[in-house]
Length: 193
Image 1: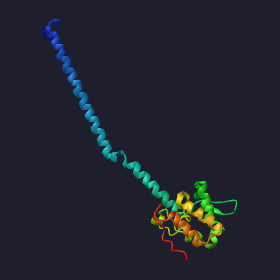
Image 2: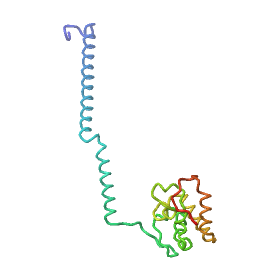
Image 3: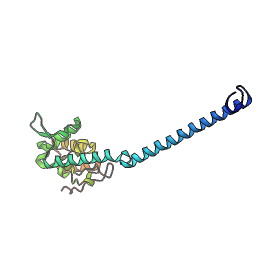
Image 4: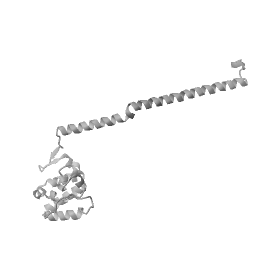
């Protein structure tokens, strides 16, 4: 005889074994469920302590960025300049592309510099919004290195000046080709007489 006076293999023993199996399974399932809930609660609690785990890396990146900018500004670093074969010094950003380099070289060429041609040409790329007052402004910083409209206007102005066009003729050509809002609002460059 086994448990409860029921013989092995009898009806009662199977029922009793099934009950114990069920009860054991139920206990195991309840234990696993409680363990999972406790694990989730512990994870949530630890995430709350560290700000969800995302705030610390973002704060660190911001702090490092601010320190880098302040360090850069405090020691007065300027972009590297490169002296070309012709002796013209160009900032390193002028070499962003071949066309950019050509436009920066043109902006510093004596043909353009003599009559200050680019300062009399409006820029139509929309850079008025960043404080530019003429096409020359675009080549005093890195803007001209990545703006195709500025580069095209500068190179065309250079070619026309080299060919002997007057400032008024160059301005008329630039206004006709790039003006009218086709590319962006023009700078407030005074008219040429």
